[in-house]
Amino acid sequence: MGVTVKLYYSCFILFAAFWFCAVSHAYIYNGGFEEAEPNEQLPFDPPEGWERENYTAVMEQFIPDPCEGNVNAWQIDLEEGLKPIEGQSFVVLSSGDFLPEPWLASIQQYVYAYSGQTISGYYFFGTADYIPYNDYATIELIPFDSNSALDEITLVYIDVSDVDEDPRDNDGKSIEGWEYFEHTFSPSEAGGYQLIIAVTDMKDFLYPSYLAVDDMTLCNQPPDGDINRDCHVNFVDFSWLATDWLEDCDDPNYVSDPNSNCYRGTDLSGDGPVDFNDLELMSENWLW
Image (cartoon, rainbow, N blue to C red; front, side):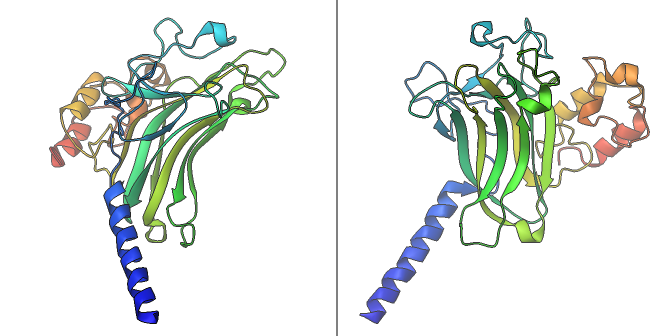
């Protein structure tokens, strides 16, 4: 009996390891959210490769619905709306939508991170709610094995109080546009995680909050020249550098220009101007 139990246990461990390897990757599948799930019959297009809960839509442009709350104080152009940071589309999660859990929307997938790899991406948070209804959005890594020595890693946490400077006006607010996040895994953090992106209502479901995410990657530490941090140094990075060519990224007037890519890191050398010093650094890793 003991031998049989041990055999079954060994088989179970092997099966669990095989299953985890099959569903987890050392990269993020569809992290640019360019592909929608083709088999879902829904009034929106959820992203392919992600487990979904409630409203999570792949979109080419996002303009909040004014019927769902006062969004006039959002810090983006409400006529142009939010557009992708890269590619043709991005994902938008909305709280306060569908039963049975209208307070939450989330997507998730399993990933495996190695020491030295970097996970990165861009996010946007906007809300039609206001204080004291402190809705929040998160991007987190939860250890796949609850018994492992790994800790949870919070990549992004933002809530209504972070954007609502005047809680007396009952206006919804937002951040100014896409913001970047990244995390490099130490040796003690290497392992399997559940990558969870979520936005959550607090106290009420009347006014929704939104979390948009785009250009998520998991790869080795990006080299000089990988401006969009997609693990490739190519013409996409060159086009961003060319936009800032001979401009000064130390000049606050230019940095505030909506056409500026300085916040993305086009000044590779860190000396201010985008010039041949930066082009040389990019050329050293061309097509990496």
